[in-house]
Length: 118
Image 1 (spheres, one colour):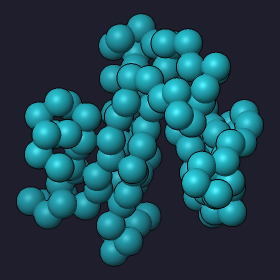
Image 2 (cartoon, one colour):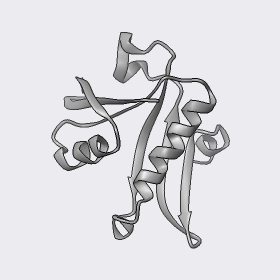
Image 3 (cartoon, one colour):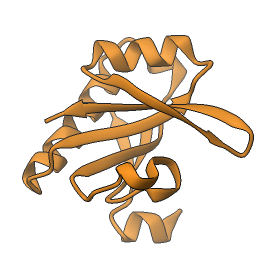
Image 4 (cartoon, one colour):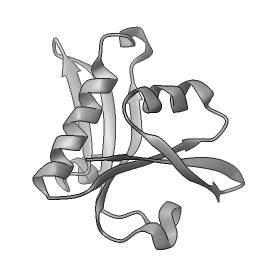
């Protein structure tokens, strides 16, 4: 994990000195997005919030932080993927401005591709 942190790819979020969330960002993602990858997006990956801290707005704050990172670089979108079967997670992302734009299969699992315009 340390190399990913040093590369500015993996982030930990703390609340009162307790780690409550982690996320990873990528500046390109051809494995999931293929030809849709045109260099205009930031990719949110490996995003998790400690379940005991759910409902405190941590997830929403992380998304806004990633939106800000994209805006600073002049990017047009935030993109992510999640399991197509994760209805609650998809609904969370939709409440935070993301729309489903397609699906892909990775290692035999159907993934929902989502994006949010900046």
